[in-house]
Image (cartoon, rainbow, N blue to C red; front, side, top):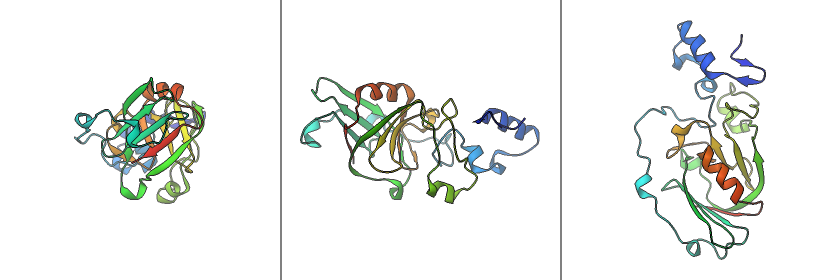
Length: 201
């Protein structure tokens, strides 16, 4: 049976079959090596500084004129996402993954335009150009790179989403999106709304 079945990729089965056949992981296509992520990091097992010690609470007034509809600040340096509710009674701080290179990092102001529970995923045209072997579509489920929830931003292809691969959190590892642990995106999903302000710095 193919590792892709019923529209879902079974990475463990694929890698196990490949290993039994004597194929090294490096010989596999890039999408198979990284099927659980939209991210293209070369070695997720490498020891990296996760910047947890640099987490600190911030003041919304330093970044926003108001908190209408709530406010999300993503600090790509400390790899943290800050959320303030509209009435400022709720403040949350979450560790994130961030874009892996400056050319993939977009900074500035945007907003949440759509909220999706159990999102599906397709690679961007730029990702397909870099690696044509990426699948065209991955349905919702445990193999989906966007995790269990996604907040779509007004910038095309940019999202704040969950991830099934928790090794990515705290790293420069994404193709542009901001990743959170699934339990964190699920909490943020309930707090944020369409129209929530977003600032990436």
